Length: 428
Ligand code: CMC
Image (cartoon, rainbow, N blue to C red):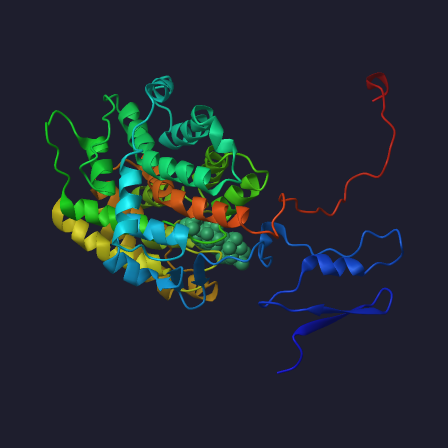
């Protein structure tokens, strides 16, 4: 192998520089050495949507999009989905290693004992309109938590950070369940600390008058698997938002509210809601060919298909398909499943999708499972935000501990008007 460097010749000046290649990348800032004259700012790289720019060195999540590989801290997602639990996986993501028995006991205890919300927080949530979107309520409530924990501003103290992490991981299911109860006009149920993370969430969502609500173990397990699959996904839109906002050293509640807002969009965490809307619109298997024609004409997108990174079957989609079978044994089959399976079959054989390497992503089947479990579509992005909270927080801690990171500040290529004089309104 030759030298680990890149030689660049600037044809405007004939100057040549040699850039070191480390971990498969050059440092973009070194391009600034290339100038046409002394006043020149220096050469920049242009990369809208960061499609070929690494913003960090990370040790959390590894994705090989071409091969369909996803690993948290090196462990394949398939093994975690089969053998781990969401809380254990959350510990792994944050700390880099699986916990031993004592570490896990402490971690679970701390998460379980921070699940309650301040009564004022409840009142704040009650003030939302009856038809407020749960994700809008979730984003606002998480942001409001920063006003309850002003000490969270001290982001440079690891112990203080850990306390906020316990609080956030513990409270997001409670907030999420309250958004749902609010939207259907039922009283909020406080957490039951004897239940598992997902069992407690199901109880806060669905408990009615029962003294002892027992969550269905198959559904609680399925939700746990779905939470593992959604826990992190390296530098995606919302993780990037978390890091970008966090780089200003704001408290984690404010940063996490921003990350959740990014997740709300239909191209990110809103996609599973969009998948169900799409499947409902298609309505019948016989309408699929006409729908595919509209997709190919660019009129609509096949939601739940395609991914910026995966150019192969999203490994999470494979696991979700298996989880769906377990859920449907309890709930009965969701009739939309047949349409989804047929849609997938046709799309995977179609030249348009094959050529563009468009495969089902995590959202293609997750919505169908959530719906079968009785979870309304408006809750889907919230169901994504609960497990992703630990991913955002792990990315945030890594950012804060990285000596190379500074406040995020991209450059621009200014193409607007040159200097010109202000024109008074009478002369315009
Ligand atoms: N349906 C139809 N065509 C598509 C789709 C789709 N779902 N996705 C991409 N394409 C086409 C696109 O039109 C373009 O075609 P052409 O080259 O002829 O212009 C080509 O494929 C490349 O698309 P792109 O928009 O440049 O790809 P991207 O990497 O910017 O977008 C994406 C990735 C996920 C936003 C996109 O695939 C999409 O909109 N998918 C539907 C929404 C969705 O399912 N999102 C969930 C993503 S997974 C959950 C998560 O991690 O948040």
